[in-house]
Length: 166
Image 1 (cartoon, one colour):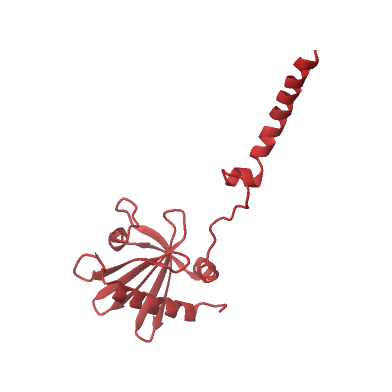
Image 2 (cartoon, helix red, strand yellow; image 1 turned 90 degrees about the vertical axis):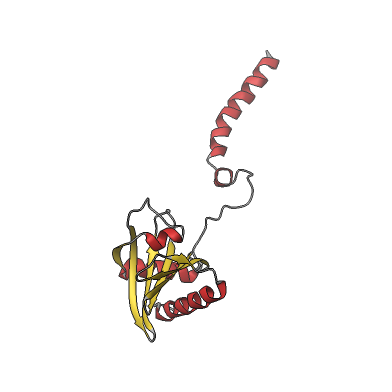
């Protein structure tokens, strides 16, 4: 009888402990256990920019053409964004908060003559892609990374200077 009760007790103990261990934070979030789980967080500036756009931005639907070239698409439908626009020394600057892929992303653009220049970036302000969109043409990727990066840095600097709570 002693031999039979030991495996039964072990079975009951395992049946009680295993469901509890599945609910532990380290076991649930990390398949290898150990270490603490850290979800992706915004940069400090990205977090402030998201809050600022949520609080003061306007709900707008944007045409999908330039967004599709940047890899943001909704099967040809308009893209819902929270948007803010301001006038700068050299034109009008616009920033949009996009959330169609269930993550926050920014799209900045401004007009230079008859051409709109779009920049898609993440919340850490790393440029993902850039697009030129002439008034009477089709959007195309900017393949010259030096030109795209220089314009992106200029637009980013404008928004950092305008952002409250610096």
